[in-house]
Length: 103
Image (cartoon, rainbow, N blue to C red; front, side):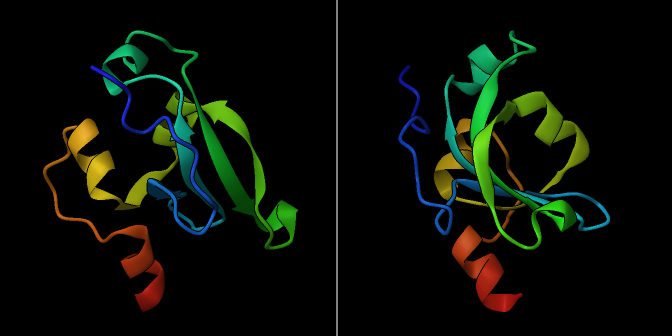
């Protein structure tokens, strides 16, 4: 099965948004390099993200990070339907656009 999340997106239209519980970190997932099934077998699977924190002075910095790190330290707050389907997530979440329109 092909990776439907392999095409890179712009920072303002990510596949998914993760935030740290205290809100100091935000990750916009812009691309995955593997399918979720392959990621589950690889502790070094990575995502292309745009990350923002107090240390970036409110700006996003782009780069690769371990998928496991984002999932461990962040909570999914918004996701594109493609993301929800690929990762088998059944709960209703706003899209990133909807999430930021109400924030």
